[in-house]
Structure formats: structure tokens, C-alpha cells
Image (cartoon, rainbow, N blue to C red; front, side, top):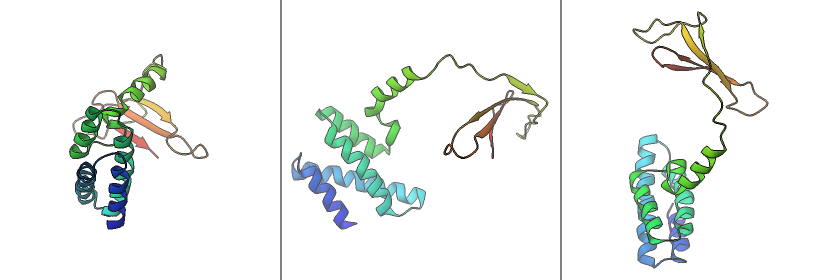
Length: 153
């Protein structure tokens, strides 16, 4: 772990002062420690994943404000797609998505809701390819009354 931390600091030192590099590395280390406790996963694994992502964001940041955003997100535990730095990509992705697809029609009488206090038999039913293409699609159903969603294997 110490060697990994040194490597992260060395990479950051190519662009920043050693004090700034150590500050960023320390923030990544603290965030990965918190996350490893929550997920009960090895700290080294979490640190390597988090440092890889955040190191890239820090090194790609063009302004001091963008680097501050990354540091704030590290401290708040914000990762991956939730990062503010991905907002442009998310907007582009949203524009590309087909907005003409409508909500599926509710099917009545096939399923009964298992949610406490809801005895509805009206459900929205749809399929999505959530695994590799050589495996079957996953079927979903959502109660039209209470909104409880279930996945069928």
C-alpha cells in the first residue's frame, strides 16, 4: 500500500508542488479508508480504484476551480458518473437518448403486489438486456399502484 501511495504522490508531483500532491493523495487515502470500512472491502483495492479515477480527474483539470471540485468530491465520497466533471458527458448522453419511447402499458391480473398494504394486480412490465448478449434479458415489473419494482430472474 505504501508503494502505491508513493506512486500516486509522484504522479501528482509532476504537475503540482509536493505539498499539493500530498494533500490530494491524503484526501484520496482518507476517502478510500472510509469507503473500505463501509463496504467491508480491502483498503488497497478501494484505494487503487479511487486513486485511478481521481488521479485522472485531477491531472485533466484545466483550472484551479475544477481541481477544487475534484477535491470536494473526494471529501464527500462522490465518484464516477455522479461527478460534476461528467455533467457535459451526461448532457450529451441525454440528448442522444430516444425520448420518444413511452412508458409501457399496465398489465392487469398477471401479478399481485407483495408490498404490505398493497393488493394491486396492475403492473408495468418490461425487459432489458442487463447482462452480456449471450444471456437472457432481465424482466422487470413495477406495481402501477404503489410503485414497488421487482426484477425477475
